[in-house]
Amino acid sequence: MDARLVLEFATVTRGLSLFLQAVFNAAIPDHEADVFRPPRTEKPLYLDPAVEWLLGGLSHWDAEHFLFIAEKGYLYEHNFAFFPLFPVILRGLAETLLWPLSPWLTVRGRVLLAVALGNSGLFLLSVVALHALSRIVLQDRRLALLSSLLYCITPANVFMTAGYSESLFAALTFGGLFLLEKGFTFQACLALGIATAARSNGLVNIGFLLYLPSLHAISQIRVYRATTKGHSKVFRYTWIIIRLLLTSLLGTAVIALPFCAFQYYGYRTFCTPSVSLEQIPPSLLSLAERKGYRVPDENGPPPLWCMRPLPLLYSHIQDVYWDVGFLRYFELKQIPNFLLALPMATLGIMAAYAYFQANSELCLRLGLWETGAHKHLDKPTPGFYNPRVFVYIVHSTVLLVFGTLCMHVQVLTRFMASSSPVPFWISAHLLLLNEPLLHRRITSAPNVQLRTHSSSKNGCKHASQNPITALLPHWRTCSPTTRSILGYFLSYWVLGLALHCNSLPWT
Image (cartoon, rainbow, N blue to C red; front, side):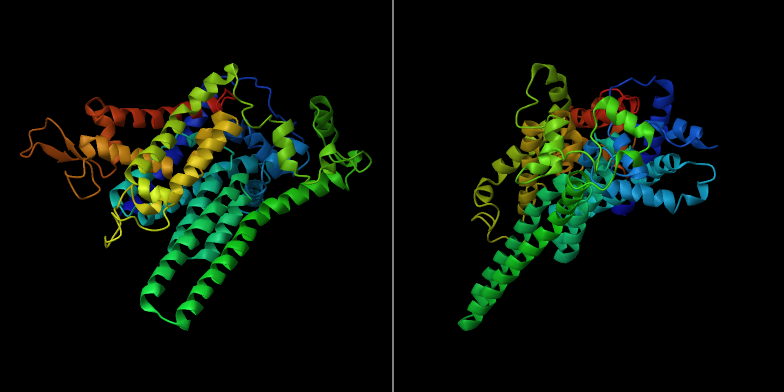
């Protein structure tokens, strides 16, 4: 069964990731980067050194913020750049499932252990959700299988493993989109709304909520136009439009609510604070004074952003602490980071270009109705050029353009890999299109049939059911496209673990 194969491969890659990060963290000295490093306020217990040695590589760069929030809550102003759902889950695991270890592990140690367990489980959920979503959208079993297996060796692997919210966000986003495709709009809104509590770019998923029900409504109107007459037709049209408007308004509110609630919490924390400096641990207050971090103080003046007409703390943090803005990253010194993001950007561009070339009329009509070439087909073309893929291409392109122009561009790899299935769909599509060992005409089953120099009667033999692992022993005979795509996925998969887990520049 395809889902079982995907789940097994995902489990293997999670175990291997945890093992390799421990090896790299032990073998390579940590780089002393100028990053957020809060002091430890608890005395280490018996098992803390062992957990830190085994899993310490999962706590670097932005992961330190999530761990700190899970342990201490939102204390510093710039902590509010990191949304609360993932820290809440970590703390929940630390206080429930891992509570029996409290005599031997501090809260910090249990939270770090929760990262390894939680993200492993969340990644497995995300790959199952991606496979289900791919099956229903692509309507192509082999392409869905290969896409999901490629996701298991995602270039953003280290961020799916370390203390980041990418695995959580991917599981909720892919799961929510699957529910939306199946017509479970209310459940989809809940899943996508919860995703917004994990990452701010969950707001972009509102586009799916507006588009997919609109597509369904147009299909219903076309059916009723051909099957009903008179006042009944007007009534049905009116009901479809009212239901669409209600679904769009309520669904948008549900998805946006976590973002708005978190911004309100940030406003109350700093603009109308109820905490004095005396209530903050001295070591953490000393760090704030040394680094210039703002902390809430009921006796001090409110920050200037509180006086703005729309006092959004998130926008203030991105502007002041991370210098995020339109074209701000377009500097000569950032060329290495642009090169780091180039492969993912290339996949996004290729996906948009190939889809437009194959479905130019459909794209010009925003995919809302069939073009003349497809109108009389009983079933749409399966695979990457399926009309149902259109909205995902648009979503991926929006993420690509925004990430390139308005964000730290090196984030583009994990930004797209955890938010959109398109990078994996286009990669699998290119492999099936250009790799003779995977060619559709060889077999209709999802197994890989490899041409070899064996002495078998038909000159062929069946390899493992997993196409990825089956191709690797035949690397030299693979097509340039295969070597490029798998080389990119595997090199980033390993390099990310080696560099990020030692505080080297891989963010």
